[in-house]
Amino acid sequence: MLYFIIDILGIISFAISGVLVAMDKKLDLFGVFIIAFVTATGGGTLRDLLIGNTPVLWMQEPTYVYVIAGTVVFAIIFRNQLKYVRRSLFLFDTIGIGLYTMVGISHGLQAGLPPVMCIALGTITACFGGVIRDILCNEIPVIFRKEIYATACIMGGVSFFFIRKLPYDDAYAYVATILIVIGVRLLAVRFKISLPSIYRSVKEG
Image (cartoon, rainbow, N blue to C red; front, side, top):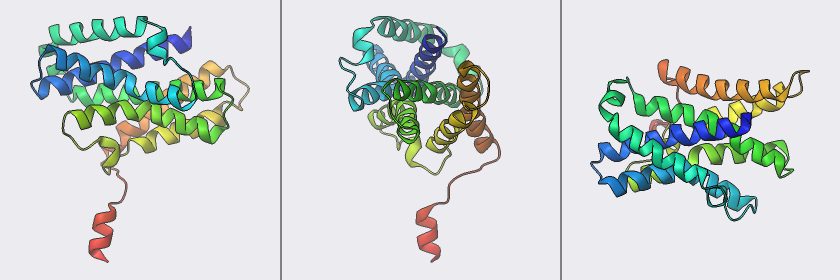
């Protein structure tokens, strides 16, 4: 049940971030739905294809499609209220990567993959939907900029396997991992922490 709740919350968070980007680009209703859909399912689709879980999850379970459709309607109706939330796109995107990192790791564990591959799968699940969203909306994906994005997912994934060794229920490790990913991303933006720019280093050299 906890896993399903995390998955649904991730779907909602990413769908809202997709709606916000699509509305900012002034797309029509169909365009808004498509951007929200690929943002919410893109990472999970690639994850399922990589581990051979076909048909992919959202095709097996229509609930995900219904949740995305409902989220799109909700976000459109309350779009003015969402705009008042400071940096709402950043907020929902950050919550989404935290939730989806854990979802991806869980699928890796179920597939019997080693920790490194589970972390990679978690990062792909968290980031790839945003990559598709940004490419379709003619933006450079956040993951390819110097911002702490995929790095936060990796740090959360590594933390999960350390926390999991402690004598506590796995549910604590799940929640802690999500909070670590979100916390690292928020702190990195708050204190302007970023990865070094290769272009700048080459230019200075």
